[in-house]
Image (cartoon, rainbow, N blue to C red; front, side, top):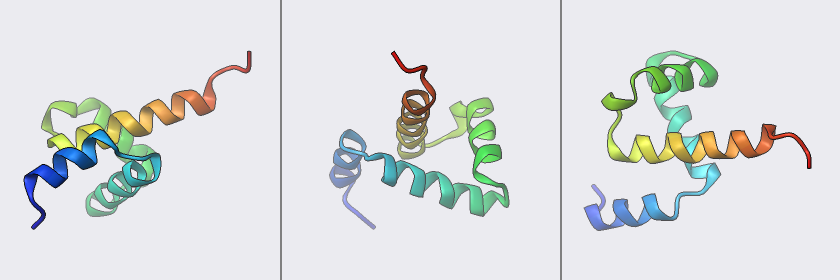
Length: 71
C-alpha cells in the first residue's frame, strides 16, 4: 500500500493518462465499456473515493478540451 501522502500528491499532479488508466480499471471491474463507466461515475459521483473523483474530473476536463469548438 502506498503512503497516503503519495496518493494526495498523485491527485495534485494526475495526468490524463493516469486518469484514464484508473477509469479503465474501474470500468473493467464493473464489466462496462469506458463510456458507460464514465456515465455511471457521473450518476454516482458521491460514491467514488477521492482518487476516483480526481481521475473522473481530470478525464472529463480533457474530454471537454478535446471536444471544444475550434476558435
